[in-house]
Image 1 (cartoon, rainbow, N blue to C red):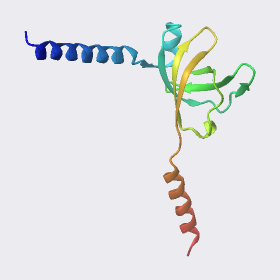
Image 2 (image 1 turned 30 degrees about the vertical axis):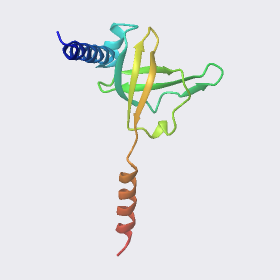
Image 3 (image 1 turned 120 degrees about the vertical axis):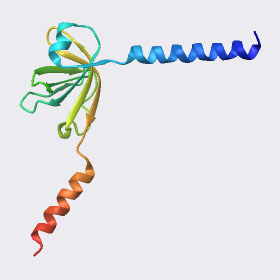
Image 4 (image 1 turned 45 degrees about the vertical axis):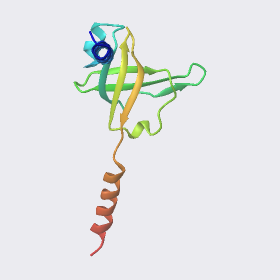
Amino acid sequence: MKRTHIALIIIIAVAMGAIMVSLGDASTYVNFEQAERNPGTKYTVIGYLDKEAAMNYDAQANRFSFGAIDKNGSKQKVIYHQPKPQDFERSEEITMKGFATDSAFIAEEILMKCPSKYNEKNEMAGNQNSYVN
């Protein structure tokens, strides 16, 4: 075999390994009930902030807890070992990556879909125009 063939085989093997690692790290989208069936397994849950549930931040433990509702309507307490994200209350949707325990969903990462600033500007412009006669 030529050296170029060997180098090409090594490059392909490394690329396949990188793809396998990235696919293995991809978490599965589930609801809270499915996550509770397999405690400790990492999942991704998409939901909304439960505005009726309490939000608490313990600075000494660096722990933020809040209530969330998944897309099936199941409510769950969520614990996030980071400070409360900025504009958390304004989020339209919350993507939580983590695992379930007996008492809560432990979020290791939180991504928020916030309202678009362009939608807010359009609503404000529409309201201003409606007052003009």
